[in-house]
Length: 597
Image (cartoon, rainbow, N blue to C red; front, side, top):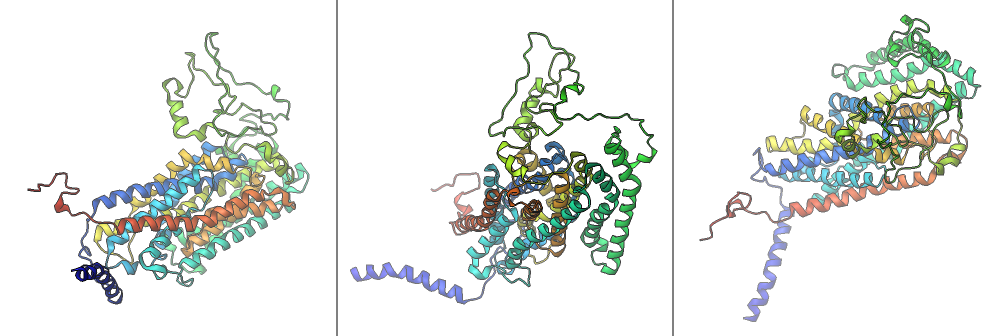
């Protein structure tokens, strides 16, 4: 009897081992679920929610990182940056995002291995959004800019390795597998940095090194040249990727068109932009921004002139008229948000003159009530949902004074001229960012939806437009509600930012991202922006002009993100797929208690 018991103890493990060896040695067989659409409605709802989180955190971290330069140098306020990003990121997602989405979905992991178990692949892709979105959310709350591309590629890697070991991942560089992505992580910041440094040094040599008035006149004269390069790059990308009818057009057609449109924008710069800049900056005419489109038709001085005041003469500036308050009414108090840096005004800009910031005098309605709906609690609601709108994001910090002193600084009026170019590059960099980074969130969910619709693993499938819209909306919401964490952490902390530097940084990064998007390689915009910013900072000729400690922290985050996301996602995937599956006949998930009689 004891012998039989002893044998029984070893029969089950032996049987399991034998079954495992047989299954490994045999070919894959189709699951009964193959070709059956509409299974596991709970899975599609689960994936739908986590795809939103992933896109949300991309907006909060990656998009915010892309606009930190523009906000830090004062070209855009935090509010206006969010508005620009929301519009152009969304357009990039809808019009240009499908190609890269296809790459991240099908080329990191050999989806053919999941052909016989399609819903296992769907579960894995949903876990990609869980692991990636969770990791980036934690990094955003810690104000640490990380690569969302790193995160999602690492998560996909974790699925492939967990399911099939090392052979479950497409590694081949020539097949645009994982090794090509790894190479892009190093190539993209170097390429973006090199281009940005070249752009900035030409600006510095041709314009910024001259005395103020001479530099301003030279810059206005050279504006058509910079418009040629800026818009030539933009139109080149649109012809190569953005316009479907020209995607397969030969370069003999697209290159002349690109050159011709670059010349066209240079002519517009000569006719419209340069005269408008001369009148607004040199002659100090009070021309609104939209008059740039018809400035030759606007009479000289017809809209009046504005007066600038030197630092210390702010008391001469006209004060805004506020409605009188009753003595019993409380005066607005200065509010300090947790973790808010001490704010320092820019030269010629007194503290407390920018609406919505600490120290501001709040305008009162004729009824003695604060405007902007604060009497109804709308302002408090706004501070809760979008606290960055009520902070001085990008303000200079006292601890970075030495860093800024080591940097080359041009006259503020000369820098003002480059705000037009930086705003233009900002808009179209945002367009390319939406085209490139939407893949990180909607790519995995597109796989889940395709399997849910067909019950099969399709090697080629178009991404529905509603999925792209869904990702674009989540991206914009993430930027508005949490983007201030990253913008506030960076700002002027990596190196001193200015409109001329920001324009060159964004142009170099935009060119790199656009080329990568055309080739279908999911590069990291975080790497491109950071590499370009550091390279431009080094152009000061003083290594002290770059915050190398902060850059080391960012670089460490880049390295740890991919393996961390792979480990977390792989463990989640293993735990869910390898867990027991309850039978509906036993009453699970049916809404009724089974009768055991």
